[in-house]
Image (cartoon, rainbow, N blue to C red):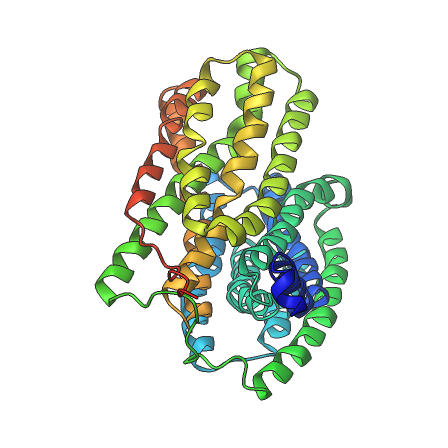
Length: 411
């Protein structure tokens, strides 16, 4: 009788129950591990000037190091995810971080270019093992709040990527190549944390909660052809997001220095503010997707940013700062929603989906940086931003994404 008299309390009770099921300790641990992993990954790119000077490398050799890292960090991820979907490996996260640790040690003592390539491959392989399985852990610990879980997981990686270059400037550049070995402490800490996560993962596995064949409830099961079409659209949206993000993360400081004659320090502050906005957008996007639907978040976060990107090349310094904060927050909210939407398209294939989308995102970021750099050499940095301004219009394709949520049954 009391329940009938107070129906508004029922959604609140259900929400509280879902929150209690959400493993925030596990999510915190996996986000912290993501922070350490991506911090280490970003060190490699940050120490290129040091390596170039020490080994007298050409730009072509620097490009080969990047290619080796990207191939192992991007292309292996879908294969790792496909394998672990069929054969879950609770302790593979710690093993993958062990590969990263070996890569760091080798990088700190590498005597020649060939050994640098091997070290880059080991670091990249560690990343390939980490992301698909860590994303699976985040989903397992979500308590049904998949968007929130992926956002918490993602923000750790974003923070690590931003911190890596700063630590490289403070520790490695003054200390030289040998000081890279100090970062093995971070890898060892990550291994300890990931081993504990592996214990939890194994308990879930023994409890029968990680079976790949378990079907998602509350979502429409689509024909294979429609799933392939939807995944293709999502990958195109990832392409537009990460190509545009590459223009800001790689060349924004050069743009500000050239257009507004800012100092390097002032330009770096603007870049930091943009990256901070990206972190906020990453946290916000997932929970909003849980509440209002992921398709709407995808639509707004990709296409909705277009007016601001189109204005950016013609804005003064003040409005450039304002627009980049808005762009960073809106655009960053897309990835968690896209990833969870894809996981719901293909229930039981969390590792495959995570590996495919993380790998593709990394690949598009690397390719985007290279191609946009070439375009800037041929034309100028201003033209790059005029061209990239149109990339979010690819978000129109979100209209063709299917609706996955089932209509609620009539009472």
